[in-house]
Length: 180
Ligand SMILES: O=P(O)(O)OP(=O)(O)OP(=O)(O)OC[C@H]1O[C@@H](n2cnc3c(O)ncnc32)[C@H](O)[C@@H]1O
Ligand SMILES: [Mg+2]
Image (cartoon, rainbow, N blue to C red):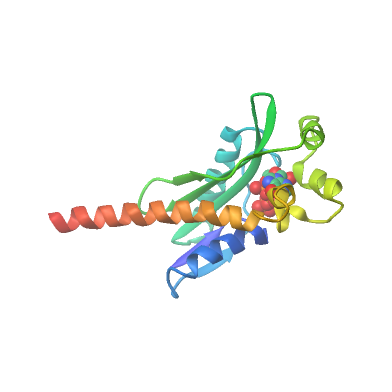
C-alpha cells in the first residue's frame, strides 16, 4: 500500500512514519511537496482545515497513492487570544475525506502581535527562540512546552486519529458486507 504525506516537512513525514510503521510492513511512505491552496499562514480553523484537505486531495490525485495525508498548521483567535491550531485530512479512493484536529495552545502576546501584524509564525518563532527552522522539527508547540510536546509528536496524534477513523470505517464496511 502506498501512502503519501502532502509535504516535505520532516516533522510531518516522521509523524506519519511513526504511526504507520507499527501497522504494517507493506506500507511504502513518501513525502511530496503539495500546495495547500490557502495562505502560507492560515489564520483560522476553517482556513487551516481547508489547507489540510486540499493537500490530501491534491496529493492523492497527483501521486497515484492509495492514501494521502494532509497536515496543516495555523492560528485561530479565541476570546482575544491567538491560539496555534493544527488540522489533518486523509484522502482515499474508497470514501469521503476523513479529518481530525490537533492540539491548540495560546501564543505568547509578543508572538501573537507579530503574526496578527502579518508575519508568518515560522520565522517569528525562529526569531523568538533564536534558532533556525523550528517549524521543521520541534515547532512552536515544542518551544512553548519546553520540548515536552514537539511538532512531530503533536502531528503523530493527528495521524493516529486519521488512520484510526479510516480503519474503523473499513471495519464497519467489512462487517456490513459480511452480514449480507
Ligand atoms: O512545508 P509545509 O508542509 O508547508 O510545512 P510548514 O512548516 O510550512 O507548515 P504549514 O504550512 O502547515 O504551516 C503554516 C504556517 O504556519 C506556521 N506554523 C504552523 N505551525 C507551526 C509551528 O508549530 N511552528 C512554527 N511555525 C508554524 C509556519 O510559519 C507555516 O508557514
Ligand atoms: Mg507551509
